[in-house]
Image 1 (cartoon, one colour):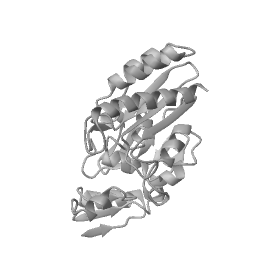
Image 2: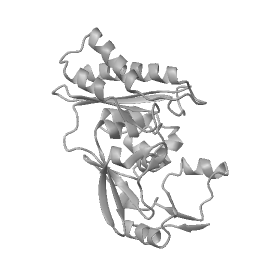
Image 3: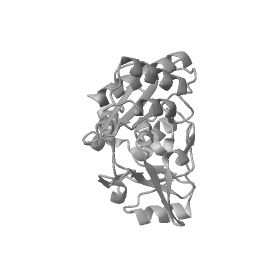
Image 4: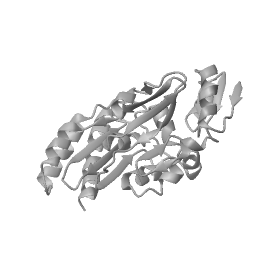
Length: 266
């Protein structure tokens, strides 16, 4: 196995230009599980750990190599909340938001936040750069449109973030768990509301009908909350697998969305 350890973004692009199919490794919290299981055996690895350009973080941009340990300190409630649910302290110290995008698992904890705020994904290669909406980048279960030789620069947040945000997930235990269902809910001062769902579809999904309904209600009462919960459950596309059933996931994501919305209304 050939391992390259560039110290800047230019070095990463040079390494990928000569070997476009090399495995990009930042935290390695997903990749190393596959390696240890014998399911992944890359011929070449490009390490991103020493590339400071990918670790930048500002009000409207999160570099792809920013770890969850850092994101736990975010002033954005949902971003801090989701980061605290990722694995163990050791995993959070290594795992990155770019890793969630690269892996593109429907259960990726950062993906509902990215979808709920309508963030964009910035990419770069020797051939140039491009910016894609989250739903253009994520195309299916563990599928994205990242080209060989391309690097995820980071996540571009909208200039005006919603006033309130909340994240919630459920798994088989309290910690160190892959989501059975997860949600991120945002609500602007105008009442405009977004809902993104994780682990209940082929990729992260938006509950568009629930969003439209609840955005039109200035002060949601119990009836409105119940209707919102039902629409979220109906918009989910869950499956039954070794972690949970379709029925439970559909029920759970509605309950989680209702609770997250209630936190946004406080």
